[in-house]
Image (cartoon, rainbow, N blue to C red):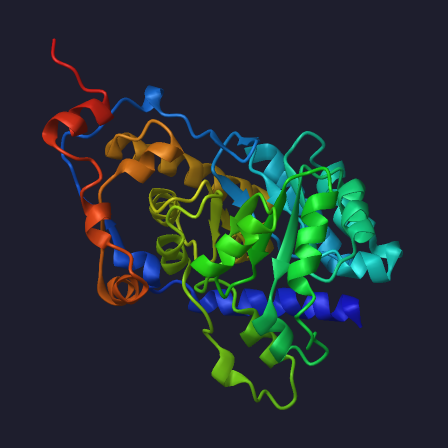
Length: 364
């Protein structure tokens, strides 16, 4: 039953990708174009560091799958692509492994095919400390993701209906595992209040996991008979909204959900993310064209991200957070209601002299 559910998730997620080529709230964010901001490509580094974690690049393959023969093959291919491109990678939820240890290899392949890469294990908020440690041990993981997904569980026919234990359990896991803990949403977003709570629980990093990518409430509704939870489709906040809501929360944030291309990666970094995750689009590329197609896509994204940074005058991903941004349409209304001053984002490069210093320009 678990293996079938995992296969259903992949099938329904890929079907959703047909709908994700259009606009989302990342399109409500634009860079102010400064025509003399550009720097030399040779001066650009894609390396990012946060919460004691160092990555070669600010892009990662976010949690997808595992737990069945088919999903084990997908994880193998994702791991190969991660190895070939140097991007970090996360496993899907390892709950299936706890219930059926015989499927361990469908997750462990992420490490065996990618022995030197940055690998994140993934558990749910009901996992015990022992289970969290087992997940980390199985993958020799460099970090642990704990996913939170109340909307998905609510729509899932066999889902959880008891959520009160999640907060104390997250705190317990964060205090008792030996790797950084990242708490992530699965596509409905983390509000500012939630990120501040996670910080107080000892969580090192928050993956905002906003609306705009794979909609797991919609996936679970597709598994229901009848499919009577359609009103839950699109629940939550977009990733761009979550990034704006999470300004200065005191812990690093990662951005995932609705990332369609390198410009979205640059926008997310400029809005304060330390790294940016993609999953659904990468999965579709893998299933359509195999490992070579995914390696090519990721490599192209990284090259194009570096090109954008060169034009914008950002030597590092963190420097993008000093670029001037404009916020438009519904996202601007969200900021007004949540008390986010978008004028500050539009004036971050400061005066002409400060801008001159930021880009590293100098007079001969």
